[in-house]
Length: 223
Image 1 (cartoon, rainbow, N blue to C red):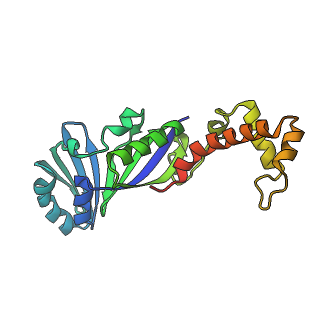
Image 2 (image 1 turned 30 degrees about the vertical axis):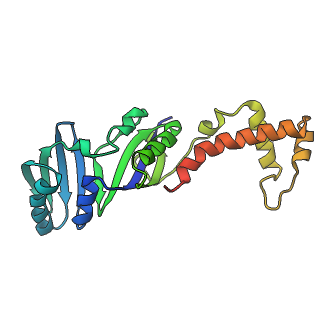
Image 3 (image 1 turned 180 degrees about the vertical axis):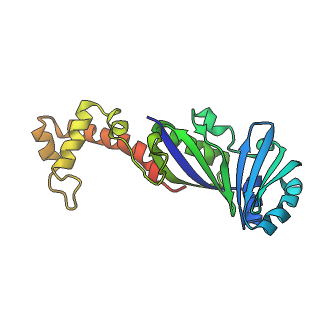
């Protein structure tokens, strides 16, 4: 199952720092590994003034296309070697969906991922830039990309890694109130109902919990 992942990133890449310095408009960035295409949206005077600063701070501008009063397109030489995260999504089988958005020092990325590679992606981002602040804004099944605010995780993504014994152990624990506060049932009682030893039942339960949490925590953890 494929998902659309939207990340909010605060880090010291040239585009983020440029957008923080000139924070009154939005910047949208496309790249084909030869040229950068930047779309600047904002107040007309601010956009026009800032276009002149791009060559000084982001590399040589080749052409400027005014689209309308408040939007200009800038084409420049590619500077992707200055972007620390640029090759990481492909490394883990993720697909980045352009454009990348920059606003007031914040970078917004949209990617196509599987649940299994979200954690690898986040870990590699933090390894590459330990000072970066990374937050998952949304994770939605690909079919729901029209409304990325919907975070819908399919049951099979959690169920498929559980053995039958692990699945039965955790569902019985949940159904009988083991996770209620206060608990309504003990591990001894649950093990007895399943006709296995307490130690064996606990092993099934803990393994199930670990597998589920391994998938869930990266989705809710704020970096």
